[in-house]
Picture (cartoon, rainbow, N blue to C red):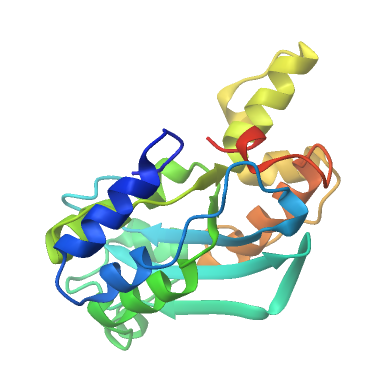
Length: 224
């Protein structure tokens, strides 16, 4: 769940008081970035989650990657990548698309160790993703199942920003035009390996900077 609506900060404080000490409670203790803050003043956490499918109730997280944007620049030294042990055999499509073998997956970390790391990174930052509904769906499912509360965060979705940009221009577009690699090609950005969590997080961070109207725009102008 994301927090564009009024009262989100109050709800976060209420949840923090209700929850026992756990990683989500610690995350909720950090204030959300203010909607009126200038984008140049913010820290954003670009996140990509690679999964075995699209259904949070049935499918598994395979890997996660993040990179921080600070001072409207990608902080490459912040790059973070975790391979997750899915607890079941990968399908042929999983291996082909993500290039992760069963042996590599079996050597990954348990998700219960990885999620607290991610929540610690996200504290006080804006979540940035491409087609963020996927990341939010899986993260909310985990937070509700393990911590009995949703993830309340501010979200910027580069797919939404690109759609708004195309709509304002009056340019006709199709769904595939909003895919991450296609948008990067359109904007003259280099092509990276697809379906790798860290390279997709970096690709999303760079796309955001290319789509940003100007450094002085407010967070409220880019929230989804």
